[in-house]
Image (cartoon, rainbow, N blue to C red; front, side, top):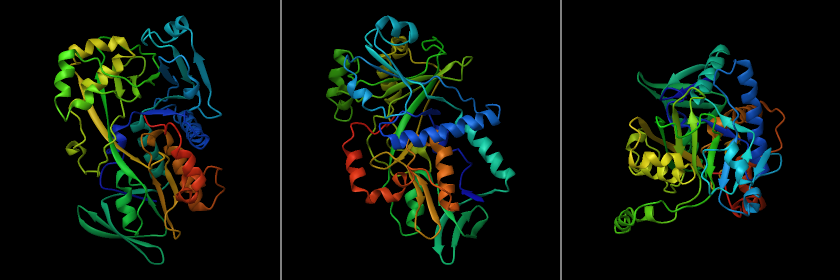
Length: 396
């Protein structure tokens, strides 16, 4: 096995990961897929003495709605959940949530990992099995009794012959597929997060990954709102914003940092080599996400007037299909394969994705969901129609 990458592994989109995992999806295909991946994560955690710090605090879905029937409808069969609708119970179990939260759905099979440590552990296993890495960029692929790849490296252009090619180029997957004359139905959307030292101890270290399921208007003053509405580029900040603000402690029980995210961006991006130059980076994001999160975690309000002195504002590309399902399987029918469109769930689904692609390559028995996660689903009109009509695509 030869891994060709112009960067150090795990240094591009994977370095911007939220490092969370869940089996909560609105369709049983994705639930089965991520359940398989979590099974592998559990196995690797036990095998490695939990070198990647896997925890299982679950996901807390919080809402002010009394009727949560639509929310429960987004939870496919086979997901272990608990529902809390008594305010005293919610206050007792989840004291960080605001008093106006009426219902909490707790997804049990979820938590966080250290994606960097997991990736490093896997790289060590690849090296132990005889795998190697070549620093460089694939600039051309020719198909002729196998494949010949032209690779641009610091020492010049090199030629690599291969019987099998796996396109796992993340945001650049379409660029690599284009070298085989194939266009993939994927696009890139830049999403942002912040992490900061919670010196006010606003978030309990035991708090699970918490998500606000309600849309909201941010609590600007009347003067601030008026100024925003007068600016065409900022007026959207005064409008109603979508659900999905989320927060979790970072670094375990002894850590001091928290992570906040909100995947509200819908603007498409062509991926850049240097994400620091990405036009979609929003200078307002740190304040916006803190204001949004403070509406369901009130202790964060103190950070609005006095922002945390130590924080990191970062982001990465969500490479995604319209239905927000991955593409894993044969690419050209001759020996090229694809693992792509793992938008926002790459770390949590990596184990099952690799295992599924390997099964395709080696001709082994495939899981029941294999066709649905491959390019073959593009010919399944009934499935695509069903997914297009779904209320949510599981984007966080």
